Image: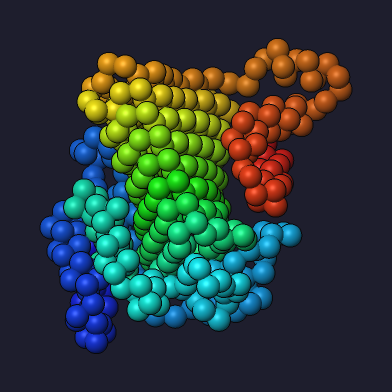
Length: 433
């Protein structure tokens, strides 16, 4: 059902792009949709989708919205308190210039992909749909086919963006069942640096679907921090891929926070393409009711003398399900690799479920690699200690779960964002426990 809706929607979308026939992105769109039309949505027979079924998603009669009734008053409740930033507002996956507030700078660009393609056509042609290989992922192909007014960030050589770029993704589910397909292209040139926050929220109570793709290029000696926060409604579906390519001496840090949505699937794929690269991946997910949160990570150590560090933590309650599938590949040439991966989970109910699958594939012999996963309940001795000091059971649970989550939240370097997320987690735990 959904596939047929998307086929008709693409025909209409494509017909409205007649003036872009010479645009290099236009040809990519057509190739991408042809692949999606051939492959369709992923199914449970695929190993990477073994625990995540999209049957409930594809049964919905979503629509591709032309507009949304979002104004400044609709945006304010979702802003991060006290955060000074370059604000970009995306509504139903489309860049909204009127609601955005970009400080600007001569040596960097923050704006829409369409404006970026006009100002830097060579850059867009070089990187767009090159870091994210849509031939390997039909959902990436689907997003690529509909890509138009996404977000582009570009920094010139040895340039830093002082304020973080805050991308607020709003999907308007007040009067329809919308589908949004946000697209990001971030390019950090040699010696440059910036921080990006991507925040997802829903307005309205109808079922909705977001299919997001972010491509990040980290040039030599660059430093990029990327934060993805998902706090959608309980009728929201979210599938997304973040694809990263790092060059020599670069540093990349990704933090993924997922605690709102009926079904969430996050793919994080990172290619360490040269020597002396450092990569950090942190994740925190909190699933309750019948929510399903699936985190899939892949770190490709292609060259020697690189280091990756990964820590994901999950809290699963009620009848919810969590999935962690983390894979580290160390190729033959990647000697002197240090790669560490850890996944820790707490189950708060007898019906909560976690599927954890840490993986290592090592084809080099001079490496230091480790991986592991743990699943358990709250520590009974710690609970007894707190209860013995007149702390109520629910309050004790909140204290222990906050401590459990702090290993991830402590890594956030933007103080206002860290304080905001701690406050959100506290509110959610107090409300749910």
